[in-house]
Length: 239
Image 1 (cartoon, rainbow, N blue to C red):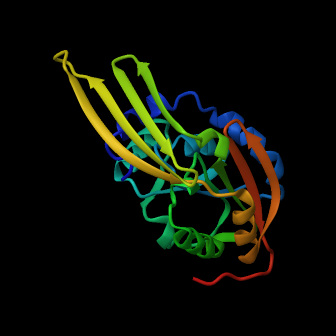
Image 2: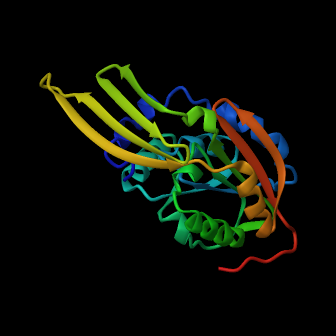
């Protein structure tokens, strides 16, 4: 399951998300960063957050498991004049060189990690790739935004997306069907299935604290909640 098939239309149906506003809410709490800021975007998707980070002076690396999403990110960032460093990797097996001043995991990436054991492994390993005093920023879908079943239909010029969601109180199943108008007047269909899991923020806060991260700020942001954590200056992680 993933976004490989619908990656080429993902941006068209996610154009209502304001990455500038998102970062404007977060950056006031990222104090003490150096001038040459290194950022890692875990679950970077098509690179929209990375694009805004580049514009703000960050040197960015993006990581995603979907090759389709990474291809879209590479095209977008190079068209904007940036040289992206993109890695195809599972977050549960994250293995990088060096450390970053800020690590982001936005737009429900954490919710898409279904197994808490894998999420725990990600947090444990991530500690090794955040600079002492650096930050980990992520967001989660709130339970109210997932409740029940829903079907939505969105239309853009020459494109149509049907999104079906079913939530059982812990897990959400998404079915995405995109239709793209071909040059010959016919329609091409591409489909993906994506799953998500609801996590109480208090549970993840306790987990991250056990790995040496301290909560700095929680921000309610529409149907999501943003959490900003800071790594201890002294504690060392273990792979």
